[in-house]
Length: 403
Ligand code: PHB
Image (cartoon, rainbow, N blue to C red):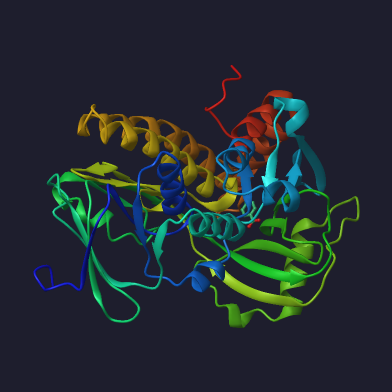
């Protein structure tokens, strides 16, 4: 395949594999600095738009979308949340982000971030090819890497670049290009998954509700006035067919129930999926002329809503170092990427895995494990220091310094 004849050859400074938020935001940032990119993705635009992902953006990430001129729709249609509610032992505990750390987050689904970025690329004349196949990255350890792909009409194309960025998601093929004996993969599996639904119903609470109960974890999130997103802890091999609507509502209601009589507003279940998750990091995040960004390099469990924020942070740093690397500083400038990205990443790995363990019920947990977990929840929710820690981690760091 590598030596086959291609129909067209294009040259750009940076070729990007993957048109999710990481790939598109990188292309957008480079485009603003006058650097052309070509972005390719095996999925069609419609397929990406139909994929449900998490919906929480740190205030910094939301500001970046507006300030870099992607779109101000987030300010009109996104919703600023100044806290979350954590339910435990049948009681509601509010974590007031604004009062505790002076910050807030934005509820704005990843799908909308993707739509805004794809529209911005189109508006700004950026090149993005969706629905390609047979993508290959070649010669990535040289200073003249290439990307080859087959377009939707069957024609073959080559992109010649100075750098290639692998932003091709959690099933990345780019990360496999780092030789097995030169890479390290760190990871952790969890003995549970999330059962996710979309339901046609009004919101049950003003903010997101994270619930820990003896029956397991549940998260009540939102999408619009009339559509809500909810999840509950299930077994990783759960089948959606075993869950008729009544069973779903009964399970969710039991997990959020409490002495205050709180009940979810029910409605038709529009969609159901089992979401498996894990913690994962591959190092190095750069190999020769290729850099990895977002889920291609790392994934986090969804509990702390960090994934999209991490991806956007990666490409903020990466755009900066690529601009330097394309100038007089040369390829050495890329050395700064991994340490800067990883420092934040491992903080997020810690937070995501901590919040996951804090709120889920470990299957087969011993009496000691379950009581220790209750003690930890009391420590976190019942002390100002504990609530401040949760608020600080959830709203993001360390771009702004607040000590
Ligand atoms: C979501 O709205 O899908 C969502 C929100 C918060 C999370 C995870 C998912 O922690």
